[in-house]
Image (cartoon, rainbow, N blue to C red):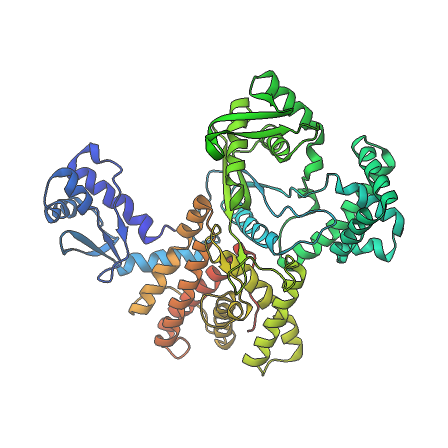
Amino acid sequence: MPSAHATLAPLVSAAIERAFGEERRGADPVLRPSQFADLQSNAALPLAKVLGLPPREVAQRIVAALDVEGVCDRVEISGPGFINLTLAGSWLDSSLDALADDPRAGVPQQAPERVVIDYSAPNVAKEMHVGHLRTTVVGDALARLLEHLGHTVVRQNHIGDWGTPFGMLIEHLLDVGEGSEEALLVETDPNSFYQAARRKFDDDADFATRARARVVALQGGDPETLRLWHELVELSTHYFNAIYSRLRITLTDADLAGESTYNDDLARVCDELTEAGIATVSDGALCVFLDDYTGREGKPLPLIIRKSDGGYGYGTSDLATVRRRVRDLAADRMLYVIGAPQSLHLQMVWDTARLAGWLPEGVEPVHVKIGNVLGADRKILKTRSGAPLRLMALLDEAVATARAAIDEDRPGLSEEERVALAPQIGIGAVKYADLSVAHDSEYVFDLDRMVALNGNTSRYLQYAVARTRSIFRNAGAATSGAVAVTEPEERALGLALLAFGDVVAEVGETLEPHRLCTYLFDLAQTYSVFYERCPILKAEPPVMASRLALTALTRDVLLRGLELLGIEAPEVM
């Protein structure tokens, strides 16, 4: 069921065309919320400048041509030319009844695309730290949402699973013994394993020699070395999956597409760029110099494809990913959910790929820029020693903070209920804090604020859902029925509910999950006002049935919205 905005926008645009001719076809109706009506069209003001007419006269001509029979019961002009539109009660009631019957709660099914999303990308045998949090959480929310809109989403977890450090990691694995407690640290405490290997590499010349030889064996495809490498990767995926499970991330082992995936493509990438005259040798390195990309002092800025020592860099593997995602994965859109500082690098990769013919005009690459997570000092969040904060430790702290808040706020809950609630609230709080601010902005990580019951937090939304469920538990045999809006609070809630589908579709276009968070928070606040001012279970039967229907719709929309964000909604709060 379309929202009020989606219903009125084409009607106002059609009126503008009828009033001022075909050249105004598709004019923006400039619909905005209004304190005097349900919606307000401000189209007369910009049109007046173009037409050279007084804004109020333009508004009068639009209104004269406006056909909103059955949709609006009042249309008024105010001020210099604002058109106030008040919806008919019958339209609002029937639209809400239709929404209640819609299993998708008003979310449209869009024309399907194949969308490849690159997100998370941790490193083998290393801890996931707070820097991985936002790419993982934002990327997964976008994957869920785009799938719900009808798109085919291809998740790509571009893990760091190749390179020179694997020489020392494999040798360390052999030293401690496969299957030993030290080896299994890769599953639980990978930094300990990595740092032990690093210390031996730095302090033991014989070990360093063996590690360098192992790198050569790995790159040469030695079967035994590859087997040991696979073992390290598998142990690391167990660790990744433990994190993903706690965060309710939908990535699986089938989505792994690490750096090693493209090993066989790298030489071919260099050869094709050289043969096409796109890449040239500069100071021994194979580089691409693109127009309009300059560094310090205006010197041309290179995208290095092959280093002077013959090794490949990120530019090579990133070009290989574009090539494969277009050719093999048939991408219509490619989303790279990675740090904002990578913007220039990605743009150079994409421009190079277009020159090479690997990135057709019909395929859209998008950088979903990820900002930093800050500590209370407004610097990048780290431990007291200055090391990156381990993600598992952060999640443990979030659950502990949530448990403390539950103990304080809800002393009547049983121990069993508190144990179950703490991770639902704590993990939800971490994810929502990431998702509720623009993904390219920075935010301060404050667990006490995140788990608060008041304010724009996941716990507030979880509580709103629990409240609606409690109402139905107390309703007994009473059931929801046809909607009949009479009170201003019912009207405000109904209009908010009808906007859900538009918001989800907008997030699918803008790739900005914080807009969905803002909508859900506003909806929960609107329902709270409705709950306080409009008695539900004490109302007369027809009114109670209508208000139960509005409560059920609120519950379903909040549940669906939280699920799209990957956040649980407990039965009891």
